[in-house]
Image 1 (cartoon, rainbow, N blue to C red):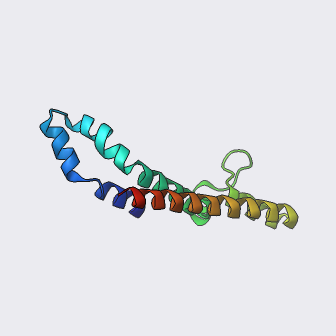
Image 2 (cartoon, rainbow, N blue to C red):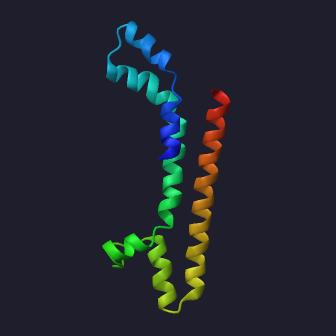
Image 3 (cartoon, rainbow, N blue to C red):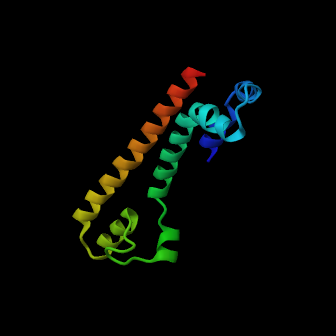
Length: 119
């Protein structure tokens, strides 16, 4: 959330004001000025939220439970495989989880670096 909030806060208010003085309505200003300028930061925030959600185990286990093919998530799949004693398969899923998390963080940081260079 913080990444997305910062991206929206860094949109130049003068550009929005100029668009309004030229007759653009609030929705047009949002979709043609604000959103494109904040898009990279919003994408980075979404990627970082995805990386964080990969590790969310407790809430998923308590609220949704684990039903194979219905509410299975990556973290619950790892837990289930460990409980069954299938550690090798659990390590494969763990590797996939780590790669997804690092990939999402790397992509988010890359988007943030590109955004800060353009400002």
